[in-house]
Length: 108
View 1 (cartoon, rainbow, N blue to C red):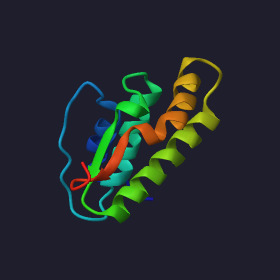
View 2 (view 1 turned 90 degrees about the vertical axis):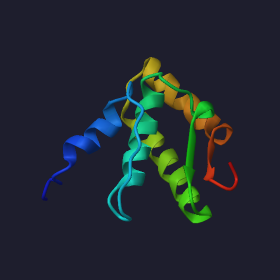
View 3 (view 1 turned 90 degrees about the horizontal axis):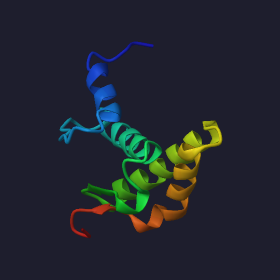
């Protein structure tokens, strides 16, 4: 599998949790995957609770997909985590998933 030329930027989106950033890219380039990875990393690291996250997109369909992918990502990371504070944070995130905002610009 070919590694994208911008892989270092994709990695930074997920790991640069101290940096505020704007990600602008064409359709199908991995924005949702990167955003989900960042949201999951924020929760796992204890930098944010799921109830304090806001993820805004343009269409209802995209918002539903984003929410679903975020839930799946948290569940996957929870399965792979060992007992401890990260596991507790991920479990709390699943319980609080509906308290955060994942929706459209209009709904926001």
